Length: 477
Image (cartoon, rainbow, N blue to C red; front, side, top):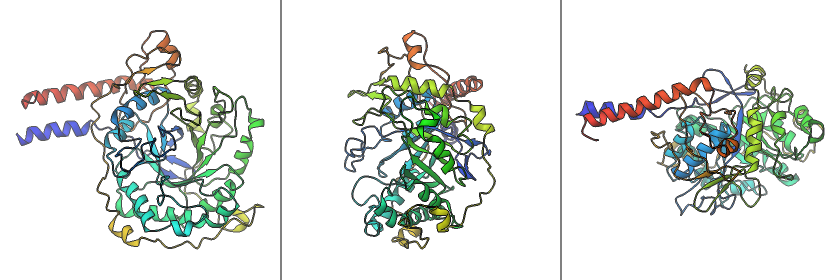
């Protein structure tokens, strides 16, 4: 009997397929095979920034990755859209995320995660960094690491989001951001089984260039950013390359020694959004130095940036923005992304000198590389105390219990996730979800290259049959 149970356990464990964890090499994200990874993603915070609405209320036991039914619905929608990454801003490190992270993993979607939260004591205060950089804060961010370090589809951690955004914060905060990155990397080295990238998400303002230069310079790899995200909304409506300011972005960051991407983008002054910047971001002029970006945002909130409307009963309605974005993604030249890969050799990081960091910018920017000491060295050594350490689990349900409607109002039949093979990430499917639904045809999509579809179905079928056989043999069915 023990042997029989072991066989069943092995089958179930084997069904938890995994994407390849990403690392940083030169100006690229790469997987374990050395293949370049370019972010095609979305910001994902259902409920918006209000921490109670978005689920980050510690007393609620919820956050955006705590409800498998919601994650299953959204993963199915995102897989059809063609994205490979989501960014999540607020998480509760004390709740279980295993099924949601496993669902996103199974469809080839990575997660980029902010370690901070909007609650007092759980983020760095931009005007008083010294008082907020304390043991309680360290316990918070270390707890987030412990909760998510076990998931292979964790792309990395954001150590901060637009903490530097004016003259005062620029004069105070930069050394604290490098200190937090150092603390996170040291904790990961001591308590995780793999290296996990750590970086920063910056405001698109006059501090963007000195902040990038400051965080990417020097020989101190522990405090240096592994990647740099920029929250940019320069391209609006029918902007062009010339009118958008994108040429300025390319010129500013052309010599980046770390991966560079939009950690938010998607101006909504014109609705529905045409998303013309997609062609620019993944085209000839940017792909050599930029690693894609994250559209803001998935769900429709008060700020009016959503591409999907979530009803009170949990049903989802695709907006015209979704159709436009999907159409733009379908036109991405995936071969161009591979052939325009920047160097993956060991990066030569510039020295942290004022002449490099400031380059004519205000001398109010704090360029000091003398960092404040870790305020919680005991936690660094012993751990945060968070026993809620995540791991992949078997995803057995593929169909969402919620209804999903196309932008035409027609319900989409057969909305479900399609599990990918090991080591695959999601890519644009080439379909128009709303048009397919409206025509009455099947709107299911593999979400990955067509040559892999048969293999995916075969793996799923074998798994179901094998488990059923073993279960029957054991008298469990």
